[in-house]
Length: 80
Image 1 (cartoon, rainbow, N blue to C red):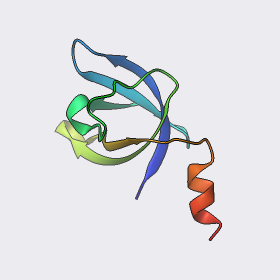
Image 2: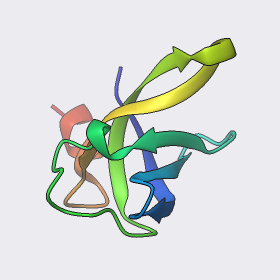
Image 3: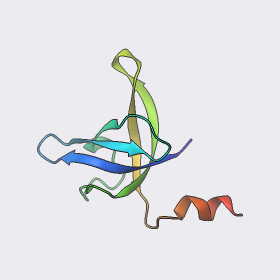
Image 4: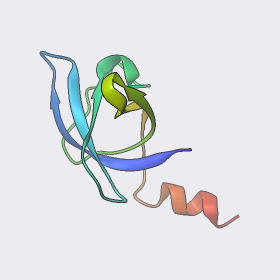
């Protein structure tokens, strides 16, 4: 299931950052390897779709991050 959120922070030196879910809740960690457009660095405030997986100790992490081009990209899919 795809979730959506906005980049909260990204440290290019570490190749890691956090994304804040639109549905609320704690920010999720992600690493550069989980970005689908690995050549482009994410910027604070950019909207991404992502999936989650449980990592060490059951803590969720964002994976398969894909930048969303429009603010209403998921709404357009739901109207069909």
